[in-house]
Image 1: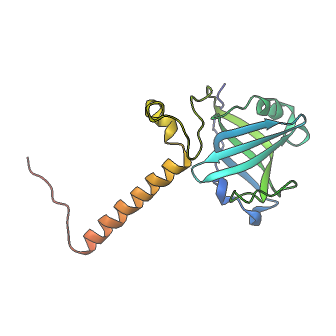
Image 2 (image 1 turned 90 degrees about the vertical axis):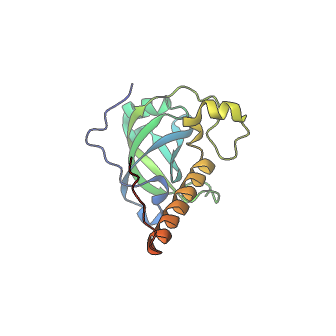
Image 3 (image 1 turned 120 degrees about the vertical axis):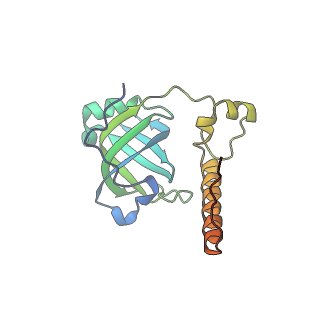
Length: 175
């Protein structure tokens, strides 16, 4: 069941949270990339357009209600998490920009539930193109595709700026 966003505002994107924020309370939103339940502790990799951030749910920190919701999280659920930024107590992940920190959740809202996606939403997916095109709205969430779109947008913006500086103007067509 989707919850309301009333009174909720994102404070950071996932990779905007850094070691400089340790001790601060942040609110992040995004898609659940992975969820791992290790008994009394649940690890969630939260993904937004900027990257991935690890979230930790423990019942004593987030309460029974939020912990029960965290147990139900699956890939591609859209969630909002409020929590305290901490240095990672376990192994640092050198492959992530946020690999040295984690957010210890004290609140969770499930903004949208999702069925299991037909293919993994991850970089360099080996999924057949036909399936990726059928579910293009999911394919556009992949980090490599997003990087391509961002680069294309920047090139178009720079091209327009250079042409404007050189005196080229967009003419209006008369019909």
